[in-house]
Each structure stands twice: as structure tokens, then as C-alpha cells.
Image (cartoon, rainbow, N blue to C red; front, side):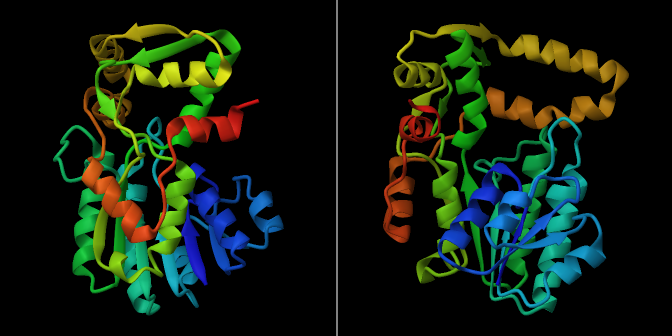
Amino acid sequence: MFLVTGATGGLGRRIVRQLRDRELPVRAFVRLTSNYSELEQRGAEIFIGDLTRERDLQRACRGVKYIISAHGSNEASGGAAELDYRANIDLIDFAKEASVEHFVFISVLGADRNFEDSPVFKAKREVEKYLQASGLPYTILRPSGFASNLLPLAERQRDTGFYLLLGDPKNRTSTVSTDDVAKIAIDSVMVEAAKNQIFPVGGPEIMTREETPQIFGRVFQQEPIVVTVPLFVFDGIRDAFGIVNPDLQKSLGTLRVLLANEFYCTQEEIETLESTFNMKMESLESFVRRYLGS
């Protein structure tokens, strides 16, 4: 039995789908208010609970062989301390109690770069360290930006012709297929070379951020109109929020880190990933064509 937290999120939903496609048993940890009917129809066991409640986490771990922690906090509402940090720490403790055989933690690329302005990055790094010291067999995945997060931007460009680019257009990234991350997360419990390892996970190409709308343009056969908003404009808006809501200002630190820095995997890291998991990483263009191409 696999336990997947964050099972209705962009990554978690894909993990559950792939597990069921392989006819593997999976317990999907979901909120009562989330849309989990598709997962139930696919044959997943639905566990309705609250990740901030220890009793729910303890019950969810019973009878589980593998855990994939794919949940995360919402940038706008904060919650890094409760969801990204504390819920994972408790989940690791209850996994040990339940004699779980392998724990897969979805971290973030750059978690080890000491971004003090980001509660999420700090929380992810502290969980990494706690998991490494726990004695549980583990795999830590540090993905770059998920391709699925760009689908709404691609749809907006398709419908309007416009693409809004925040921050430095020359910053480099290696956006990764969310389906690839799901496959790697599942295979991590089965591939011996993945045991007790940390893997940066990115797409096969290192691109500048200004290349993203050009990729969408090729898919939709249109020339994009790119509107670039400098980072200082975002900073001004964030400071304005801080006057009335300091907590929101702090929570936006993660978004600021993502906009201001480069997040990409080296070619050597991608080659290691592909050889370890015997796969070829999917490009952003291929991903978008599969989901939105005509």
C-alpha cells in the first residue's frame, strides 16, 4: 500500500493515477472539501483527513508500506510552518512507528541554497535533514518548476495572445514534466540506486524564462505578445501588502525567491536521473502539446 499526501494536487493526482494504472494499491490523503471523485473512481482508497492533525496522520500510516509526501502549502495563505514543516515531521515520526519501508519526500530545487526570505524553502530543507537522520529508507526529490503549473499561462496566451513575464527574462530554468516527477516518485521505492539519495529533478533543456512564451507560440502557431514586469514592481506591490497584512508579505517571500533566482539542473544531473530511473525526460514543449495541442 502506498500513502500519497497532497493527492488532489497537480503532482499528487498524477502519482495516484500512475499507481492505479499499474494496479498498485494506494491510499489518497485528501481534504473533505477537495475534488477527489476521479481518484475514487480509479480505485484509490480515499482517506479524508487534516494534515495538521496528528491523529489523522497516525491513522493514515497504518498498514502502509510506502509513503510519498507530495503536499505543500498555498503561497497566498501561508502555512509553511504547519504543512511544509510540521505535517512532514509528524508524518516521518508516524511512518517510523508504522514500520514504513520507504519514504519519498518531494522537496524543491534550491532547498539547500539558504533562501532566508522563503518559509517554504526553509521548511523543505529542515524536513530533508530530519528525514535523513530518521533512520527511514528515503528518497528526496528536488524538482524545478512543474510544467503543469504553466498550463494556465499557456491557455491564457492561447486565448488572448498575451504572456505576462514577471522578473528577469534571462533567468534560466529547467521546467520538468509533472508526469515525469510522478513516475520517478513511484519508482524511487523500487530502484535500489535511489535508496537514501537526493536527486535534483529537471527537464532535459536549460531555457531562459523568455523562451517559455515562444514554446507556447510554437504549440499554438501564434506569435506571443510578451509583457515583462520588472521585479521592483512586484516588490512594491508586496511592500504595499505588508502595510495591511504582514503575514501575507512574508508568505510572498517564496514567490519572490522563485522570480529572482535561477532554478535549473545541470546536464550531468539529468543524465544521472535518466540512467538511474531508465527513462528519457520530457521537454516542456512535448508536455504542453500533450495537454493543450490540437
